[in-house]
Picture 1: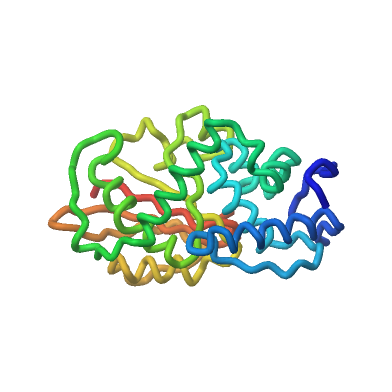
Picture 2: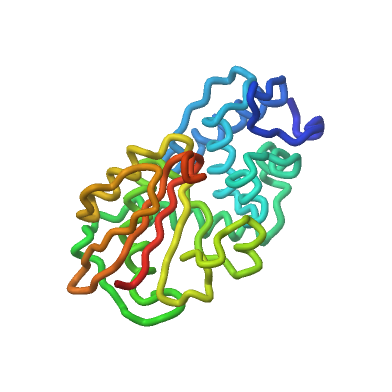
Amino acid sequence: MPADVVERDLRLTDPLTEGPDVEALQAKLNRTAVQYGRILDFVLNEDGKLGPKTLLAAYKVAHIMGLNRSRLNEVEKEHLIAELVQRVIHRPRTRSEAQVRRGHERRENLRRKLDKRGTLAGVRVTAKAGSPHFGGCGDVMEDFVEPFLVKRGLPLGSGKRTPAENAAVGGSATSDHLTTKTTTAARDFPTMAGEDDARALAKALGIAGWQPNSFTSFTFSVGGNTFRAQILWGAGIDHGDHVHVGISTG
């Protein structure tokens, strides 16, 4: 199905949204995954049903195609693949120069994360407030947490947000995502099946006792620096579609 017959937004629903347009989208997503095999690690069943795997695949492709954060938020937070997003996925040559540039930067960033072989102990912490270090929390996020979860197949979701951006996605007024919090880092990792990933990250950080559906925070150390981490997953705390990782100075 060509992109010029995309006629509706697609949304994750129960029962699942179905149709030939969904099947066409799945086919295009699979072809794109073959093209970018190292950074797109999925193979979809082209059954014409919009399930969680298709939604996540659409997010991953939209991300590496350079769509802006507001469009990615629709997929990540609203479970919506808008017509515009579908058209870009079908015909990436229609992208703007800004989208092409942003897509290239994101693909290179993912490749760098996949190439990282570092350990938590090897993270170099710069305890300077504000971007990019955020008191050292940004260093831990960039050099350990993100590579760890990207290698497990999770995409990079929403990171630091301005107060306006945070309000637009319904974020907490005290969220570690906020750019006004200069000694915290935060990243969401979209997934509908994140418990094992969250548990594995907690173990890698040396955290014992992590449980889903809990807002408990834990301390961990890197190079003599103490940090606090929240690793959130579970429908019971409204985190059933992403793993949230927040890091703050201890």
